[in-house]
Image 1 (cartoon, rainbow, N blue to C red):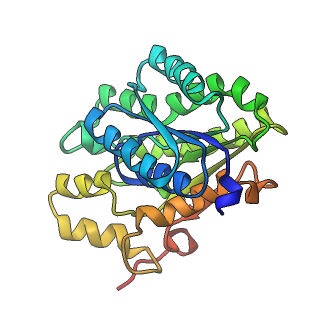
Image 2 (spheres, rainbow, N blue to C red):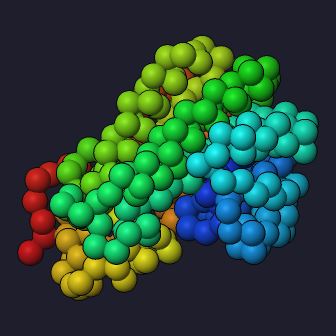
Length: 266
């Protein structure tokens, strides 16, 4: 895998923690030339950049608020200036309803929360991809976009209505972007199940019955546990690599078997 990422210049959004940090570090360890990381959490994303450098890639931090259009264009411009180009865009940043509103359910969700979730989870990946497209098309290093969707974009959700709807939109957007950028740029998405990330743990802490929700989150996994961030990163880095040179417009589950059946483990 090291040779398959050799020389690639990455931009990873939502890189302060969880899957974003894991993807950034794994890309560095497998030969990426540079990994630019971005988030709104300055201290945590600086830590990611330092770990990336230790793993072998050049790295710098660009702070950006992905709900602001001006930040999106600036992020791409500064990435290209810092790295000398762009070969791989990882649209990993995401937000869930419960982070923004206590007791966020169908009957209580307000417009402000809906708009922020869609701004971060759908609008930002679209306009980042649009801004990055000229640079990706100019790349001769196997350019690609990898989007972080979710099994919540396939199945309905009880406590994350906007999140699920936004991830369904991102799945469709992945396919449309693959069509728009073919054949020069490959575009794929991965769909995690319940992964032990800080966002997932914060969500667990937000619900009334933590044990019930935890069992519900992992109960559909044929592999009876939470997934780990590095298990998702393996798939993301594969999709960004030259080993996936004939792979585009695809949606790849990393869900412990959740979507393979209609059941819950007893």
